[in-house]
Length: 129
Image (cartoon, rainbow, N blue to C red):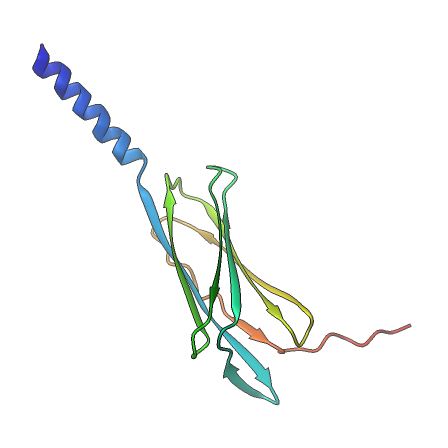
């Protein structure tokens, strides 16, 4: 009887461990500046990464900075991943005077695309009265 009880108890713990597995996702991209038709990397540019799920209640926000090549990356552990999360990246474009945004859906087994930014890429239209 004791062996049966302990076997059942171990089985329950193993099933809980299988349900509550973490899922690792890498959010990455490049921040480049476009001036006079030339594209150059932007070092030390702040990129805000936000992950949100209304399904599991998981939320995550972190600010990372680009390296000398304009590259940024953040590795996130999502506890109890259920198959759907929403990720958004943003960075401030000082040429245009507003934040640029990228977004994607995190799906099991799929790799996120590169979430790149091209600052100063287009000028806002002039005000017309």
